[in-house]
Length: 370
Image 1: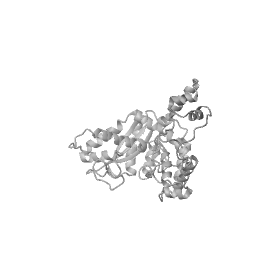
Image 2 (image 1 turned 60 degrees about the vertical axis):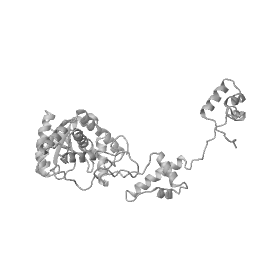
Image 3 (image 1 turned 90 degrees about the vertical axis):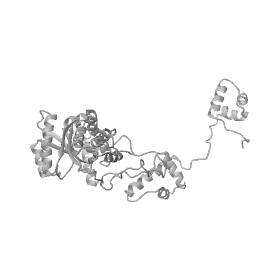
Image 4 (image 1 turned 30 degrees about the horizontal axis):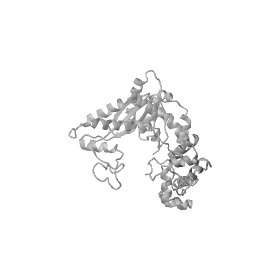
């Protein structure tokens, strides 16, 4: 046992002792210089014994934590979201003798924390198969191909219209992710925002449905649907888009467009006939695949971000008319930077490759997982 007041050698002392020993000093001389026992320096410098690991042994080895992580993933996949997999359940399933807190710490060290389930469309086996087929077909297409051979990515979105300061503030809250706070704090103003997917909120004025086409790094068409979306409304949109395509791609006799499976408009009999008449070939993305729709995965979010950014400096008393709001919305879409649009279209290369790797299942859309 070491004497009272004993302190083990630091790494700095060990390095200093080795340097002096290399310079020719004896272990006893070095012991005097460091105020240590000569036997300690002899063991360090002459016997060259490997330093023993200090402290309590690890309760879980790396192999055990690997097994815990692997088993946890298997249990979560098997449960399929129908029940919550707890640490206690993991401990019982793996027959681990370590306590739940030890298991939790080991998982936390690997950045595995309890997180909210990510919300995605529910894919059927047929959807997965269709997505895998799409990926196999287009995974080798280049950025240039997506920019030059797909003349328009189209989709529609219903935008709420925010005319007053109170409604603009409500809209801005939807874009705020979170705030630093202590546990239990956060029920007062500034720490809460409207619940996503809750009761629909009426802003006091009718919203607007826009059908947008983007291709080749530019906005091909922005069309406002004035009535209900239907087969006839789709015909009107295709006619407007045909004019936009002719202007954006002069000299083209046939166009390739990418759209989803909207049965009301795009897939209606009238819509299909309008596409044939307008010389439009359809590149159809699989059902329930917003991660392959340019406007869904990039454009709509950027448009909303830019709208809220424009409104930041406005006084609360400012009131906008509905026609002015819609004009500003359309102008914001038309003024999206070419670089942003080209990069978003070019991202189809990475998405198709990731979709192939995922065998048609969900993919990580950003650079990192969440």
